[in-house]
Image (tube, rainbow, N blue to C red; front, side, top):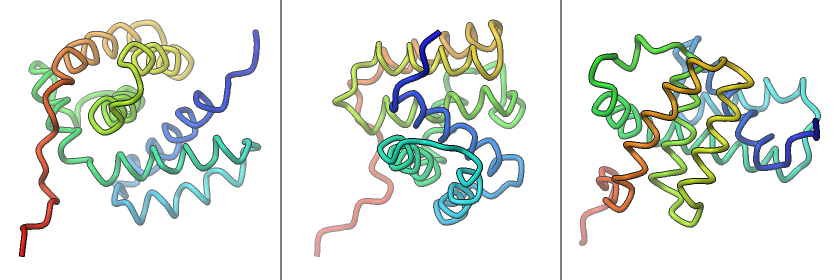
Length: 153
């Protein structure tokens, strides 16, 4: 099996950092950025993957409330905090990309998330992640609410 490319490596790095930060309940952008440096000292990643992974992890932390609201609204039977930590963070990375990176096709984001879920969580998680992301991708045309926009002066 071929080694994953830099974009998948970045997604996997972001997942691992977010997982660690989530377990420690340290999901602010500043805490995630600091965790990113600590966690990735243990991994050898190309510069491009390292930078992209940081963008993803910090992006998720920056938009965590909106992302978790989407997860909660889509998985009506499961509270976000009750999801397996790996599933929750695979979803967060993919949903961040779906909502805030419109240039990446939904199919690519979902396929990558499913591969990451398969690697880190297993087939049942992959099916759950697929179901949630499919629903969110269908509503992708709706722009996310701009909670942090400044008012005009």
